[in-house]
Structures are given as structure tokens and as C-alpha cells.
Image (cartoon, rainbow, N blue to C red; front, side, top):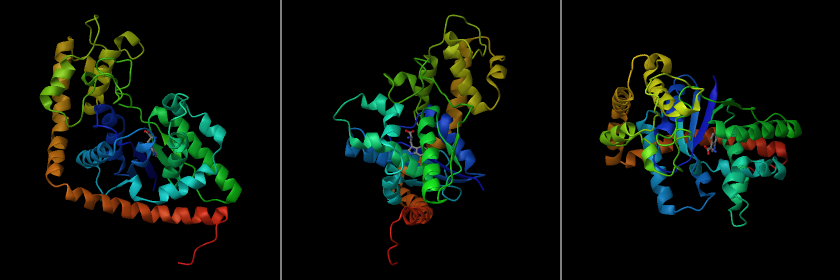
Length: 330
Ligand code: TRP
């Protein structure tokens, strides 16, 4: 059986880009693969953060993941900080990857901007991510395009470790989703929908009020062409293409087929609102049920971290023994 591991950062509310680009696929994959999903709270402190905000966004994200369909009886969802083995293996990985490799990470260059005061963890973060993946002996790692370089490092580290100390790790492969992988900002359709966006108007949150979703879609940027056609290679049509891709990711038909049913942007937008809102309605309901019973969340998370620890501890022990540490007496 294929083993899958993926991670998501707890930063802000879940938007349609997170859902259609990642979480929706996770929910589907848990039916056929042995899947581990982790909320990477350890990664969230590599940049300046606020403890209270971290607590809140972690809790909201976990509730959101369960509301959107992750199910502890099919896959295992857990907090990274609840499984100590991530930090432990991370040290071994820091001593497997090189300074040069970390120094070439484009995400570090983008976020660090050469600032002396940047946290050291921002620099070593890819080694922790390598540990996240290798601990579970994952075959496949669903990630966005922007994480390819990190995944390449995980492959390099696994191979290097295995060659030096013996076969301990499965060498993971990336799994880059195609459909709905790139939901664009509604106000600036040349940019990916992202929490770092300038305004909220370009983002649709999965638990957002229906009226607000409708309003944002109505105001979504299109163009002056006035034709509803799917033309993914024409950058000027990014707005309309994005609306058709969102529609397609939910509805299952191709963007071209959907386009053929519309002659105006107005009717496309109003039908798309309906499709989005009715797709999200059951999730919203479940999310609000969690809000009324937060203790259930703790119980669910324990199921995930118990299962994760069991797998992680086995891998950690093999790695520690292979690298030359003496085994402690049990
Ligand atoms: N670095 C990923 C991101 O920023 C999150 C992440 C951390 C992750 N550990 C992971 C993704 C392990 C996949 C597997 O999106």
C-alpha cells in the first residue's frame, strides 16, 4: 500500500486555494493510500509569531481539516509538535544535508532577505521538513509547486544517509496535483491565491459566509473580451480562466465544457457562486459543530499522534542505530 505524508502550515484561515490545491486531494487519497497529514506548527515559529495567534490558527486549521473530511479512521492527522521524533530526526538530518544545500533554498532567500536577525530555524527548516517526510517512510508527498526544491532535498538526504549508513529510509517522490492545483487571486489573477495577498477581496475562505463569497465572486476581475472561453495560454484572460478552473475543480467537468454553457461573465459568476456555496455548505455545518465541542478535537488529535509516534519511533531508532549511537537499555 502506498504511504503518503503531507504537511500544512497553521497560518490563517483555510482558503479555496488550500482546499482545491491540497486538502481536497488529501480527503480523496485517504480512501486508497495509508496517509499521514501533519499540521506543521513547529515550522510556524521560524518567523516572528504571536503565541496566542499560533494557538488559535492551529486549532482552527485542525477543526477545518476534520470538517473538510479528513477522518481518523481512514488517515491520521496530527500536530507536528505532538510527535517529538520530528525534532529528534531533524538533528540527524541537519547533520546529513549541507550548509550549501540549505543556502541554495529559494524559500530561505525570499523570506530571509539577507537579514541578520532572521531566526536560525528559518535556515534549518528544510532539514526539519526532510525529517517530517522520512520519519513516515513515505513513498509519495503531495506538495505544491513551490515545495519541489524541499522535496528534492528530502530525496538527496535519504539517498545520502542510506549510502553512508545502510538502508534506513524510503526515498520519497513528489506528487504535484494537476487539477485545481493553482487557484489564483480573484483580484489579481496572475498571483496564486495566498494569505500573503494584499487584500481579502481576492480570497475565498472555505468557511466564509455565503453572502460574502457571492460578493467576492461577483467582483472578481475578468477582462473586456466578454466571451466565455477557456484560454489557459492567454495571460490576459487569467481572470476568466481562473473562474472556469475553480468551477471545474468542484464540478468535475473540463473548463472548456463548462465555458460552452455560458455567454456572459455575469451568469458564469452567479452559477459559480452557487456551485461553490453549495459545495462548502456541509463543511461549514460540520465546522460549527466542532466549535461547540472543542474537547472532541483533543481526542481526535490524540488518535493521530499515537499512530504517528508508533511509526516515527521505529524509523528514528533505526536511523540512530545506523548512524552510530549506542542503543539505550529499554
Ligand atoms: N513546507 C511546507 C509548506 O510551506 C509545509 C510542510 C512542512 C510540508 N513539512 C512538510 C509539506 C512535509 C509536505 C511534507 O507548505
